[in-house]
Image (cartoon, rainbow over all chains, first blue to last red; front, top):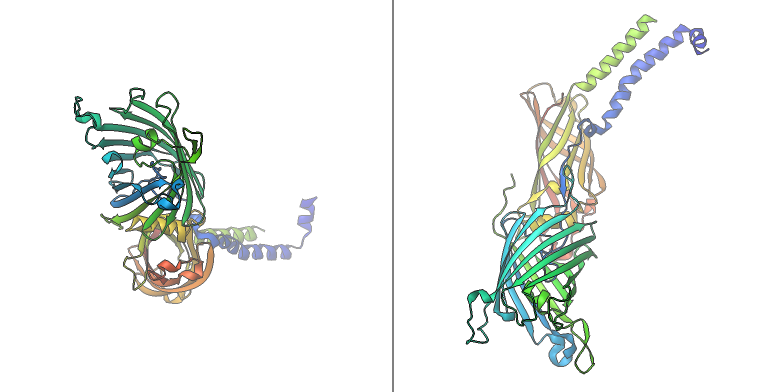
Length: 314
Length: 186
C-alpha cells in the first residue's frame, strides 16, 4: 500500500523532498561535530588512588601512603602522660615520650626513614615499599599493598652488667603488610598483619615472635581535617597479661606544608616494638585496688615536608 | 528519479568528505599554569603534557580536554592539595574547553604560515562553565597545525576557594599557557 501511495505523490514534490534532504543532510552530519572529542577514542589511562591518608602514619603505625620521591618528611612526635593526672600534671603535659625522625622518598613507591625515641633510647630505621597500588582505568587494582621492614635498637645501658650481654640483644625487628583501600574520597580502611621479633624479651613468659593484626581507617571530615583510628590486636598467649592492645583515635589537620596529627592513645611509645608489645594501660582499666582508671594520653605528630629533589616537569 | 538519486548520493558523499577531511588532533598538548602570588615563597605552577585537542579546520571549531590529575607540580604536597582541596579532581576529573576560531577568514589553515587567531568558547573547570575569549597564534606548517595561546583565568570564576591563610601565596588569577601541535586525523 505504501508503494502505491508513494507513486501517487507528485514527482515534483518528491524532487523538493530530495533537495531538502540533500541540503539538510550535511548539517545533520556536522551536528555531530558538537563533540569533536568524541572523534578520538577515549584513551584509557590508569588512575591511581591518591591521598588515602593525609600522612604516611595513621597514628603510631604506617599508613598505605608513602612520602613522594625526592621529599624529606621530618617528624616530631610526643605522647604525654595520662590525662588522669589532672591539672596538677597539666593533664599529662608535664611529661612526654618523644620521637624525632625523618622519612625520605627514594621513588614514589620506595621510602626509608629513621628516628630516635626517648623510650629505651631507641633508634629505629625502616624501609617501606608499595607492592601494589590501588588503581582504576587501564590497570585495575582494588587495593594498595605495602610492605614495611623495621629494625630498632635499644641503646639503654644493660640493666644487668654481669650477664653475657650481646649487641644483638638490643635488636627488635618488625615485618608488616599494609593492605588498604580508599573506598571513596572520605573513607579509607586498611589491615596490617604484623610480626615483631624481639631478640631479648623482658620476661621469659613473653614470646620472642609476636604476631599482631592491626586495623585502621580514616574519615575525611572537611577538606583539611580527617578523623583517624588505629587498633593493634595481639592474640593471647604471646605476651604477659600486663600488656594490652594499643588503640588510638585522632585528627589530622593539614595546613600549608604541615600535617598536625593530634590524638588520644593508650600507648606512650611510637615504635612497633613499643606500642604493639609494650603498652601497659588500657583506655579504661581497674588498678590493683579495683579502682577504675583511664590510660588515655594526649599526643601529637607534626610532619613538615621539604622537597629535596625537584621532579622534572617537562 | 535516477537524477534525484544521483543528487542525493553526491550530497551525501560531499557531506562525508567534508567531515573526514580537515580534522586535526593531539593527545600530548602542553598546558601550563602559574598561580603564584607576588608575595609567595613558593612557585605555584604546574604542567600537563597530555592535553587532548581536536580542531575542525573546515569550521574552526575546537575542543580541548585535560585531566586534572595529569598536572605535575614541583612539590608533591602542592600537587596533592591541588587535587584534594582546590580542584577536587575525584569529583571533577577533567577540565574542558569547546569553542571556535572567530576570525577564521583571517586564518588560512590550508596554507603554511603564522596567523593570529581569536578563539571564543566555553571553559569548564571544577564543574563550572564560563565563556572565555583568548588570543593565540596558529602556525601551519609541514601538514601540522600548532597552537600557542596565553590567557588568564580568575579562580573565583570557577568556584575555587582559597583559604585566607594562603591567600597571600595564591594569585587570584592563574596564567595559562598552551602549546599544542596537532596532526591530521585519518
